[in-house]
Length: 495
Image (cartoon, rainbow, N blue to C red; front, side, top):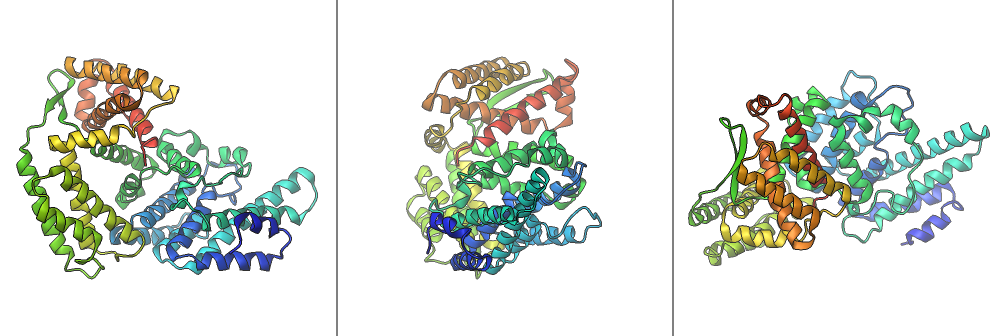
């Protein structure tokens, strides 16, 4: 197998057939899951399709449906399940039968999504080749316009450069090629001037804020949390059909709920309609009852999954961890939480690498384990304390502009918080801005956990109207402050 560097050095001296034959052979030797990932990386490089040449904004008509399809595809590839695969196939069919003539069904995002829906390693090479050809044509056209001369070498140089990137993807040693920057150490083509015209709304509109963060994650090799992406991918079809504005609203709701789960609190944020203020109250729950309910639900879900034909059995890692927990750890809530998290990750990894086949019963077990872990972290005092210790050292806010946003938005939030909650918001914000290390991590956990709960409550129009009754448009201002904080923390969430 040739090294990436040597392969690239030889690229221009080889004929088109020799170069492609060797590259295709290498990609086809990869496991199917790897070759599909290589094709998705190629499609992501062409996310802002370089084939489109127009002086109109095509964000809503063209980019939005392609973004939906590509997100669904990447999410399914990372977290395979029957429901997501069925949904992806349904949306591909809908898109291909759309009456909107602006949608090109040969677009690389759509073709890559079809490959994820029906994996086949040989088809991966077709997508890699198509993307490389698109960028080669762009380079050739650009050079012709600037120099008024025809030089086919421009096409082949750029085409082979793109093929070389896919070659490097096939030999990545990170264990997850999505953790490699999309263009690696190379520069992407200069398409900014065209992109700002063709995809103006994508670059400027608030309703595309999530999509900008989503794509930036792949460009930087720091994709948004996969579970968050999966939840966005499973937004119901009628909401997608309403368009980008409706989807943006739903994504805001999903992000708030996801963040609240990641940062469970020992108290609950509520809204007092009489005072028009947010307040916190302790969560009253019997830890012993929570543990017993958790174990019963896991035992039942496992027994159901055992009757499927998905490869999950008494020899499976997830089974063994669940069995050990039920037999030996009933009185150790921290062990239950950690063992169930390992079991859940085994199921997710097994679905991704096809150790387990997709099955609704196995997916149900994974969801029961996920809920169990979340509930224990949120509501069992011993687990909550241990979880905070584990996570707070990962949470960091280092950039000055991020700290400035937190300080400014906290000032706004304090105006709609009770005296106790307001003082704690102010203290946490001050600690985030001035401190570092685990001290900062603990403050981030409480501050953003409460921000997420406040945002969920403000999905109610009644709450917004009640806040507005004190000062016109104050509710809208608070809503925007909460959402900007959630957007910020999700983009820097530790993977």
